[in-house]
Length: 121
Image (cartoon, rainbow, N blue to C red; front, side, top):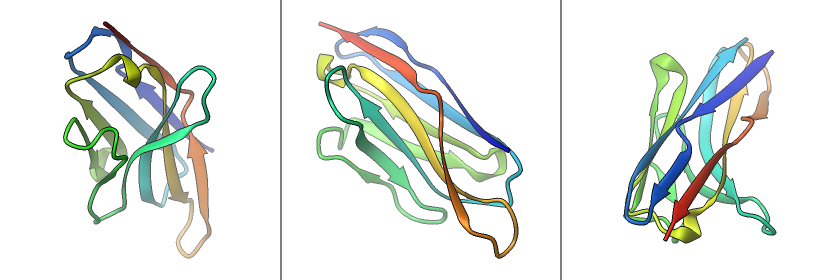
């Protein structure tokens, strides 16, 4: 079993900052790409940022220059630093990871339970 546990959401005023964390635990051999998605009420789930193992970060145009994704491989953890937050950033944020559970095995994908981010104007 593998679990992704997110933390760090909350209520913040426009222009403020939040840092989300997502820790993977369980039967993990290696983690490939880790990512953050978000879903606002009435909208579909959208990709915010992703970072491959040993690769460069990629961002949605709507968050470039404001959000930073990073990972700590030793802790199996991915972070999302969110600065200059806007009301449009209000959403449930989900962590996603592609994980190998054994050497030479397939990649499995997992989702966290989601954490609410609310930005007030």
